Length: 140
Length: 382
Image (tube, rainbow over all chains, first blue to last red):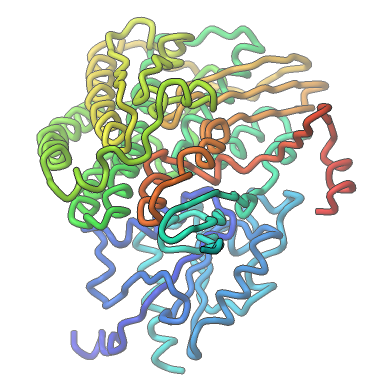
């Protein structure tokens, strides 16, 4: 058991940014905080300031107005940063891929390391993605 | 003394959804507010156009993750009106059950978020724990926690089994006691009272001027409920109260929603009791050549309005008017003169949903302007 979870040495602080989603992914990311899923047992804390965060969770279909903001948040994060794209919209555009205001998938603009597909993904899947991101923070 | 402009958002600890508020401050006091929206605008109305009705329904339900069934239901009501289709009793009752479950889920989510906003995280965790029970029901009945996609034209994708009926009742029973405790806590706790009482007051006159709808209007003394004015599904046959309170501050808006949860529970219990043993009809692809209709439902945040025009089997024009879109302008009025610390509380107390709200509206003082999507893109180069 100890060996299995030895990557949980650093407690990653997470920032989430909604780039134009439908709130579905947003809610499921928030739900990971609540008693049933309780992501804090891995030391994960949701932070609002990008300067304190190790992991950036991006949800929603990226619209043209949000691109600048997203890049700004990404550039403000300290090094050894990992980006997680949560939900089909962030990965490919999902049902909004044909919308006129869609600025392309998130990985076209900033490097993404972990993809969590689903519409929306279950909180368990998001936690799994976070653990993968955690491992990356450590390896780097 | 000088003016200081403080931007709040679009990525901010206070607002979970992206929206930029530019607050002009004098000391601690807000002098004027400038709202910048469009961070979640996708252009859904444009997406709906050119699709046939069966395809468009899935896009419609993805406009909002919180009130997914409301969008679906409003869409279906519009189409069924267009086709003049009668729906059988069981389908109506099941739709009502799901609709009210969604209201419970939305109100609990919001109440929890409100508590988080004033720094009472314990209650936030408790309320969201109860909400998980409702999401489990959705998963059991519809197969998904957030986007349910259960409605079909004239029917439903899945029926409710007798086991699931019991599950629904059990969930409500276990929730009811706990919710009463939380409600008492909100009423009695000194910290919550200090933060919410008298904050963000909206008088009846202001509410009417700014077109407030839904629970916010009902907290300001306006009796406005689509379920009663223009009943759909089984609401005409069911006993329920429309709760109206006069005071209209953040505290009353919180309590009103908690009371509405209990009212919704009553509606669901009645529906489960009334469920007839007939089967739901089989669904098939919709065959509409031409038509034009409007439809509205009472979403958790207020009246949700749809207009659809079908030509040659494809949707030619779609218009969605969401509850938040109707009242967001009131922020400019009620944020004036408040202390900066109260801004997040007041914004949250209106229960705005920005992902629903972001639509394009071109308003000019002297004339109205109607444009197609292509024209709009050319003109405003986006």
